[in-house]
Length: 421
Image (cartoon, rainbow, N blue to C red; front, top):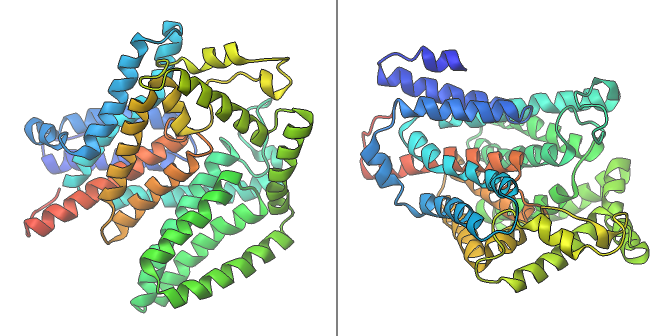
């Protein structure tokens, strides 16, 4: 990647192309690597610096879609001043929010670039290759690249089943739009090809592994697609078909049965035995987080304060649910509320809603951006996905690139004949 930046010529088109190619490479790496994404985005930012025009960029920062991410990071920085945590803990807690600062740069660049769709195609190709790796690991678990000692989930080549499910789910729902569009245009072969790609993701989630968060998020995303792009009669037929196919999939898939049955089993074990199950711990974390928020409702307890609060509130041995200590309450709203109070929650939702509003228009880019925001908002009910590394970068890249494309389309509509690099 360094050679890509270093080889940039003085030609502005060549510099823009190099920045685009680095973004494509980051999208390819996202399903597979964490360090590669971090390094790639740093190099991307360095490459962007060679093409950035200061005055237009500063003007672009005045948009709400840029103001709110910057405001949330600024609040996290200021929040270190009233936190009781050690400074090392404060700085560590600040890090997950800083990726939001890439959003204004992505908006700015892909409003000028004509190659934003390359990034999404790269991500789709990379996720498709990941399904092949997932199937191989499901057949032979020894093929996994996960480090011995880490939790070994069935069919996971790298990372974990939550990250993989988020990728596959997003690709599946996003593909629904071009499939419907191609069918309406009579391009049956192209529609069939994309349908097979989408089916590959669905079959993997049904028969290999899927997260419970994905199972909850999928119906919401499909419902939005149906309301936005299909007639009501078609929606009724698809709803009936979805119930039938869902019941059939649950009947023939032991993996899907185990995932859904784990909901009730985990809750029962938590309530009856006080054991730290996944659902039980979330309920425990949410209840305590609400108490922490009530203690400092305006500006919270400060950046990095969460773990210390849970340590002070822990009762009983660590093997029981009440004795568990964590620095992340597994809910994005509560994560923000505990640290930065109502001020932080207002900024968080203002950011989500401003980004959601950006993608109200027509077209594939608007649809991709809408689904990225919706997926993050819904899944953040059960996780802190905006601050998690993988899902956070999915949000930043998806919203940043799609947002830039939508802004560009709006600019071209206002000024026909605009040439992009």
